[in-house]
Structure formats: C-alpha cells, structure tokens
Amino acid sequence: MLKLYDLALADPDVRPSPFCWRAKFALLHVGEEFETIPVPFADKDQYPEKDHGLVPVLVDGDEMICDSENIYAYVAQKFPDPPLVQSAGERAAVDFYNAWIAAALFPNLAPMLFVRVHAAAHEDDKAYFRKTREQRLGKTLEEAAATPGLRNNIEDALQTLAAPLARHRFLGGEKPNMADYNVFSIFMWVRLTTSEEMFETPQAVDAWRERMLDLFDGYARNAKRAS
Ligand SMILES: N[C@@H](CCC(=O)N[C@@H](CS)C(=O)NCC(=O)O)C(=O)O
Image 1 (spheres, protein in one colour):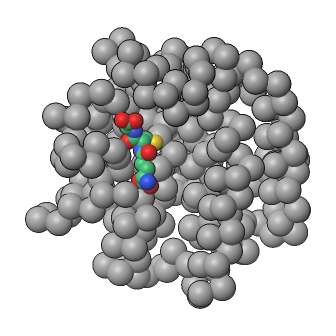
Image 2 (image 1 turned 60 degrees about the vertical axis):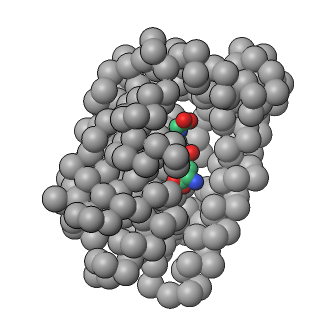
C-alpha cells in the first residue's frame, strides 16, 4: 500500500500540516488507499529522506516522492482518473490560487497560527519549532501573533475567495479539483490546530468549507483536532 509520511503534533493522530493535506487530498481524489505514518518536527531520523527533512513524502514501493507538487505530478501521472485538473486552464487557475495563498493568506495566517501550533506540538518539538519559525519571522512567536491587522487581512483575503465561491460549488466548478484541495488544506491547518474562531468567514466560503469537509465520506471532517 502507498505510504504517506505526515507531520504530527503532541497527539500523533493530530495531523494539521497543509502540505500533507494536499497530498492526502490528491490520493483521496483518485481513490487510492494509503497509510499515513506520523513524524515529529524535530527528529529527522524518523523521516524517510533525512536530507529533505520535510513532509509530505510519498513512498510507493521503491519510489520515494518528496514535496507536495511532485506528489501531485506523480499521482496525476500514475492514477490519471479522475484527473486532478481537467485542462491547462484549470491548472493555470490552480497556479493563481497558489499565488493568492502565498501573497494574501499565508503571510497573515502563519504568524497567528504558529504560536498555536507551538502550543499543540510535542514537548520534544517545541524548542525546534520555536527556533525555526522565529528565524523565519524575525521575531518571537508571541510578537508575530500580536502583529496588528493580521485578522483583518485574512478576512479581506477571504472576501476575495468568496467571489468565485458565490458563483460555483467548488473552485474547480461543479466538482472539486486541485485548487479546492490546495486552498482547503490551509483551512485544515487551522481547524486541526485550534478550536478558536480566529477569523470570520464569508457565508459562501463557509458553505464551501462544509462541502469540502463532507468529501470522501467525511475524511477531513473526521480528522482528529488538537484539544
Ligand atoms: N514545498 C514543500 C513544503 C513542505 C513543508 O514545508 N512541510 C512542513 C510541514 S507543513 C514540514 O515538513 N516541516 C518540518 C519542519 O519544519 O522541520 C511541499 O510542498 O511539500
């Protein structure tokens, strides 16, 4: 069976990594069974590819595929039905949503969420997580979380997301595609890390979120959340 290495918090069943969710959704979309293997943040000896040092990593027999984009490409090539995107135009839209996540969502959400990931992380991972993220942010986790305007910026970004979702059931149109999975993976990161209402969600986004939670017999809805 396919094996997917997936990042775990203190509770090994809590797996909020957005990049790992991209890989899980790709496999669910094509209906392939897979087993997930939890890994911690810090102990890279538990990773299948120590030098890469990141997850997701997909292992398919003798093949090892690192990075969520490569996993998408591998899944699309090996299990082409149903396609993760139906056309070059859909793929171009995915690239737009990825750019929107990187520009409008992630830079505002990450500083608010990192402090909460830290709280839910395993004791053995806390120092590593704090050090690596504080290096990235250039300030302490707590200072970053207190940056003025983050919540407003997230809510503005979600208003943009509400525009296509007010007109379509999914970002992929009638059915979900890779754009839905990539954007929704960010929502899973939040949902599984904290039960706090960190921001308000427009109605169209909320309704789409419920549809996404229901896919694949409620796979995402049933995923364990940090308590
Ligand atoms: N570009 C990579 C990014 C993967 C990534 O950043 N993974 C994070 C979890 S979301 C990770 O493995 N973190 C471990 C660490 O920080 O050491 C991908 O798309 O797979």
